[in-house]
Image (cartoon, rainbow, N blue to C red; front, side, top):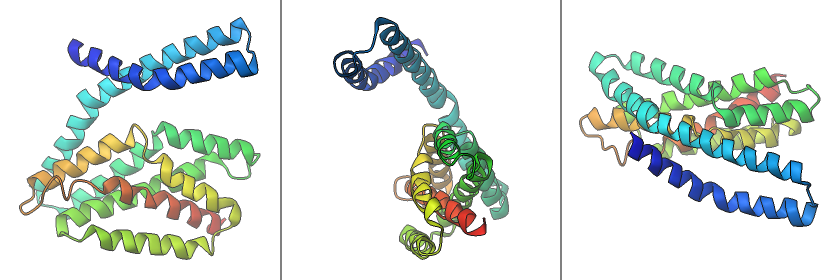
Length: 230
């Protein structure tokens, strides 16, 4: 565990240091920030580094093994309904807990002065992700070509783009991006890989991936539908 923690810290520092240095130089040279602001920034970067490191350790030691275990164990119960309902609930609640979703919905709520409330937006994103994670699990079980789901999903997106209110359109497309966050991605990937690895005739490589791309369609449709209904 200690060796893994050191490796994770090294990876995080390699990723964070370049952008941290660039921002520091911008604050110092272009903006002319004072010593107090620079100290606050450095402390923030240190807390960010520590937080990401602890989060990734948790993902590697907890979320990934748990996701694979759930994905590989569900088919043993012999109920397709249990698999797809569990997939929906896991996709839904993982999205509700996703930090990137909170960042987007908070910003929308702030900029719109509360006209586009945070909670309905989070709910529409989570339902969209849960539904498409459910479809992704169903695709793995039934052997449906993933291109069919992508084609159908983006066809619906294109049609709704001409119907949804303009205020919701750009938010919807950004909503598809925030679902690929640090909490949702490893869990959904592990779930799909676990499921495809235990089914006869399925490959973890060819069937276990593509779930994130499918899941990102859900929030786009969900937010557009929310805009139409409101």
